[in-house]
Image (cartoon, rainbow, N blue to C red; front, side, top):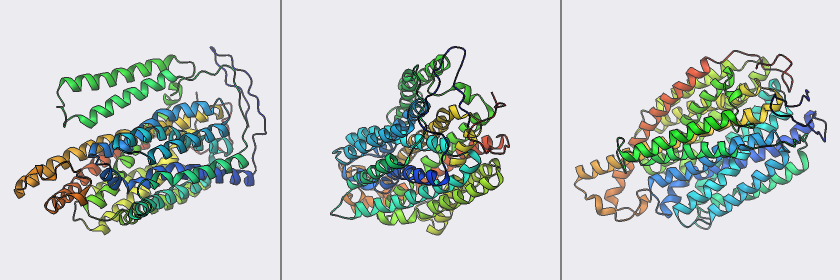
Length: 527
């Protein structure tokens, strides 16, 4: 493995001090991978375990549809903002210690979320939890990339796909069982990840051994990260309120949208001049990373934005319990498991990656087009088939887009490159959840108002009861609310399909490459 130091015209970098040999045999890789898989599992289950429980949670806290969206968006936003920082830190400091720090932050956020007494508190605590999630989702990719050559990584991505599937299938089921079990209650949806995270911490302490690279001239671009987070936050807050609290053409829109664009422009300016940019512009200017980032942005918007609202569709739109809603999402998770495992092994065997990304993007769009036709009376077999297609598409694209970028950069940039792709995928998810949530909220509100008027029912009959707390609504309201949520969900999947097409176009322009068998690039690496 190459041990070339990271040098440039402007920065003199101290030679890296490695306290262990970089090579790890297959047994050592599997032992360390067990701890990393636990980390990945706990990060994923923090979202999936609440996916089916959120209607009950927000109903118990008397939250609104906008708050429902922000419980998810808050975590995604802070995870997105912190991901590139974690990735840059991974290029500078001990990766094992960083993973363990991220676990501690995650555990603290989980415990605070479990003790929340209002929707506002829950959103704030979930935002803090997201900082840990951002670290976990970025660092797992970085550590695996530091241990395993790209050609072999396809096989190990199958293990990742398996864990992702277990977390995504088991999470909704577990969340449903927790909120349906009277002696547990919804707060245990947040507490349940704590012992798993503690176990992951211990396993990594005993099994993970990687070289430590120490540099004396470390400088993290906190200003750039702050500007990116602030710009995205302002735009997402604007999206959440526009069309409801104020018009698209209004002074509020001018101030909020204009401020968001200015902040992001400043972020680009800062990143272009930073010695250690949090989003390295030299990486994203290259063809493969740029297209993979574009595709990840689109896939993240479509996948996160669409999947978040499936639990709500089944419970509020169709009247199923949280446990039943978890069971009904199994086709999508099964698709992720099978496609990620099969595609990972085929990629390792052939060394080719572009055909699988393109095929996955096509299947993903087809799945969203099918789901775009659903309403509150659609056959569950048809809904399941659409979810299966979405799952297959996700399994074939998400991890492999990261792999394509990792294959294109030298080892010293793996942390920043991996985190950059993950950053834009999470950013896409954050935007997707926020935008589609706003579309859903506006559509549901207008449908409920219209249908109540047609039925001659006064809209004031619900008092201060949240529409998400459907069991507490008068019987006359319940049918109207269920129909509104069931019918409106199809519209957000149509938007997801359109976004997915953008990801497919980006994938089509990826360079066809054969994955390298070494950990690092040779001397002819692309500049």
